Length: 132
Image 1 (cartoon, rainbow, N blue to C red):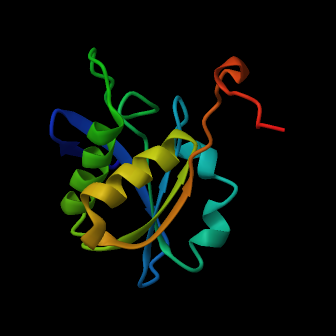
Image 2: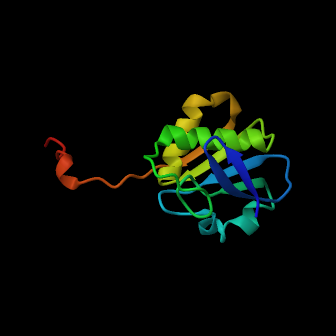
């Protein structure tokens, strides 16, 4: 099992494909890299894919402490450092999109592309209807 020590945790990751450009796929809350199984065969024909389980998910360590989006973006950067990846494209789904956006703010020189899908469920009562 490929795991790397990144800060205070060990992150489980997989690499698929060997294309020149790296695409990092980041899942959302409670999901793990297995959720990419349908996309992996096709995407790995075009990219070197880096898939990993976020802090607290799948086969990555689950520290008994609060997690933050900024911390998970730093985990992503740390994993890229450990894998000697200087630049990549990031695709994030749900909370993974939020992590990707935070990564873009903190590590913009490391991005070749950002593809966030950061849909957040919200309480309808917290939104006012548009004026008529």
